[in-house]
Length: 148
Image (cartoon, rainbow, N blue to C red; front, side, top):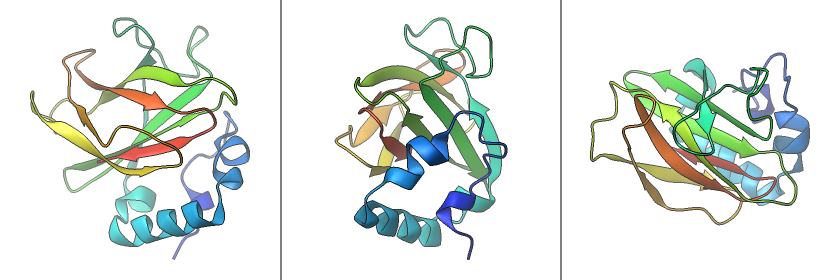
């Protein structure tokens, strides 16, 4: 089995491994490893970097010149199932951002449930019509969240 730190973030331009994954508590790592066993899509699904927006109207990618460099979001998709991961690299402030999700997989009035949060985060988020489809994440400082 692959290690969680082997996720497809090569090269790791944004420092997700260093600033988030490598700093998780051992209990979090154990929980994540059990999620990988339950949802192998986390490691083997197709990788998609996701655009984010602070205001819900202007979306950008972290590698865009004006893109948000503190919140990095990506999806792993396999067998018509999307798992959305996002991390807040800011060590002091909560991030409140809209994140684009697959438009076809998520009907209006559906939701995504939290599979993992390294700190307090909403248990369920509604799909909204923004930039196709999106959810509004609340990510604590220096935290990782995973929704399905």
